[in-house]
Image (cartoon, rainbow, N blue to C red):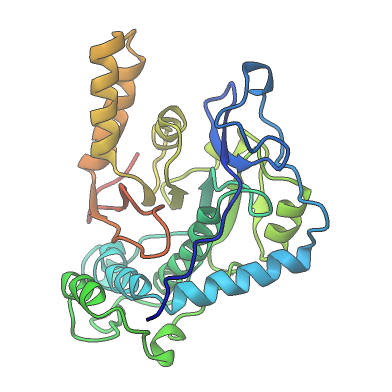
Length: 318
């Protein structure tokens, strides 16, 4: 009889919320008995660097998570979703004016600390890297009937069903079909999170990401932006989507879920107009985009209630 391996124990997660509305989850080796910090500790600071941890340690973790992600059934489903729906959705115009929508930057909000935070942060990062590699296809070629390659004739829905029924390791050539590099030259990557510490910043810089100080990232969001912002505090998410220009592609918390939560909050607490405005932002963005819910991921729950949104054909997102 084969024994089921015991799950490793991890420090309890600590939720921190700052005055700007950011909610982060980190671990504290000194306060593992706390689920939430006392009010006197609510001021957000960069996460503590675990003693002895180095840049080389983060690089090894990165390689491990990336390898596991690329060999997962979920990656195959996500790859097909981007190839069959998100990337073809970036074609606009007709005839000689037909071309790709411009995606020249990625803004990451609230990733969390990689050196002293959630394992989910690593899974989010390697997902993001694969999405960037796929989206770069539309930034480096001309649209044509063959410009959105698919690994097979299967549809996205068929691939999702197949991944659940047959979670076998994909063929090596499939996993290697698209590189998973953070230093994609066609799309500049910016990240903003007040909890990032010096080691996090050093690692992110080493893979080509530019770390911005809060609140600089919000003013960098344009109509040519890929926004990566899963599970942000609602106030921050609304701010990211409610600017003068809105992202052409967004991976974030399901917008219908956000609207439902705001409706419940209004019913319980009333509204001074802020909640109504936030609902209008979420509904407005959902109205001008196509969307798909991300599939379940067998190793982590970060994809729950998370969707990918992309601008509808020939419709401006401003």
